[in-house]
Amino acid sequence: MKKRLETRIEGDRIVLRPIREDEFDVYFGLLQDAESNRLTGTQQAFTEDSIAAWIHNIGYAHEDRLDMMIAEKESDELIGEVVLNEINLTNRSGNIRISISDQHSNKGYGTEAMKLMLRYGFESLRLHRIELGVYAFNPRAIHVYEKLGFKREGTLRDSLYWDGTFHDMIVMSILEEEYRHLP
Image (cartoon, rainbow, N blue to C red; front, top):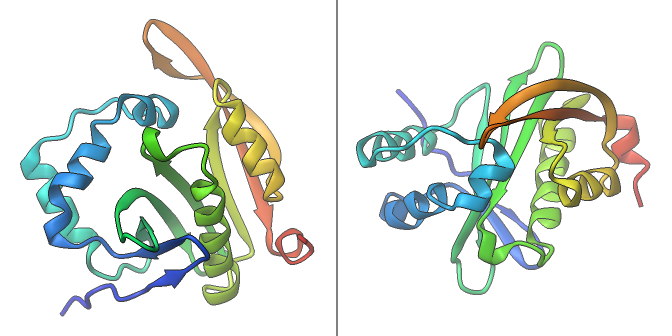
């Protein structure tokens, strides 16, 4: 029997928590955010049925991923998501991705969400390595990731075809020792 996800991670201004079934409209709206989709390279169109099924699925615990919603602490308003996926406990590694609604970007919420999820990954799951991919046209995110201790590992050339142009993806990672030495 599947176990409902109950993880809750509190920060100063935000909370990482599971999605609630009654947040369908808000979550569906986040997936329609054109700027967030561009920054994450999301090209697929989502149907209401597929999102309803997805919301139901991510509400349960999984061994290989942790999907957390980013909510403002005071209002509990859903403003984005941060996901630790491709978790491999044998190799102690995982991948992280984040998406914040355009109206809530540039407010420090993404940085705080990343710090909270990195702490969970390294301290609770005892991961050794967490990686991510970021498109070269997103220098703001690259700057934040470098501030958080991520190191550039390489470039996947022309990995995204968006709006008639190819774009590179920069692969970055942070190791547990690097994380532990952050201020």
